[in-house]
Length: 221
Length: 231
Image (cartoon, rainbow over all chains, first blue to last red; front, side, top):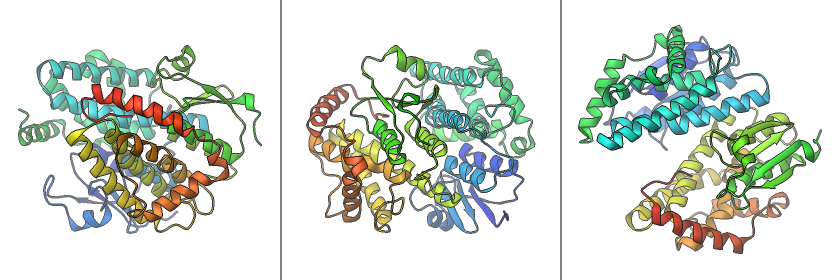
């Protein structure tokens, strides 16, 4: 399968863009990154043309054809370039992986958002909910090295990307994930050692500063 | 080819559109199954055992293997039973089907549901998004002759099938107009074709009972609602 031209419409701080970059690197694919310069302002013509419906990054352009929505894109990358696989081989194990992918997408980022968007008692509740979700994921991981079993897979990619914002949540909420979920923290360290992750994951302090800027912008200080 | 009905079970709730998706898929594949009704307001130990993480229906049990979440189940069904495939083989077409299913779920289904279960400004806001999103879908519906899956019903038809049957009930209960056939002729025509399909029309909940159910349910949720209701 020829690689063709691969372009990602990107934003350095977006965990959803991170998913796509990690996925491409895991497959050994070369790609061009086009950073959306005006983060929360004017969107580029290319973005508006490629994703007229949501007008959001990430967008993958493969030979000019746009694919949007990070989970759809990562599945597309896996379907188009099967090796190494992001999913197990049996339909049942694939279904289990997809179940957790859905859980991750529906729960993690919103729960994290509730932490930095709130204060006082509401924030305490948000932290409690967030930790419950991470504990659930830790249970799902079990004794395995990765969510993909022996291999780094779809859910490892999706979830490690979201953890790029965890330092910001921890700082705003004055808590540490490691204190509550040591196995999960060990999994984060394991994934972070992979070049596909370490080469693209943003500096956690810079993410924190970005979220601080968002708080100021939305009057949430 | 088709498993015996003892090997495939569907745990469901009579009025849930998510559960019907799974049943439609099994019927389209010619797979026999045993249906088990669950009272979601009084969850059984069976449901809590089969789906402890989300505690929701539908749940599919196949040869003792348990699969939950309607879209996950659809893809599982498609992978196990190869006849009458639901998703296209081409990776780009698969991505498009998945993209549109997600769009319809988030921008039409969730917004229509929120419009039903809220009032005032919140209802107006939800209605606006639902209608704007249908305008986008209408563009896609104009491109097809029969179904989004081509000549046969496919993944996206199943994903959006609720539009032809649940949405008119919600419109009636909520005194709202979302799928106006004059504004959305292509979507309305597709919805009618879908609901009239022999394998679909005999697998729909009774309309009168749906009206009663959603009238009661929407009032309950309106009274406790604190913002966006995640289905």
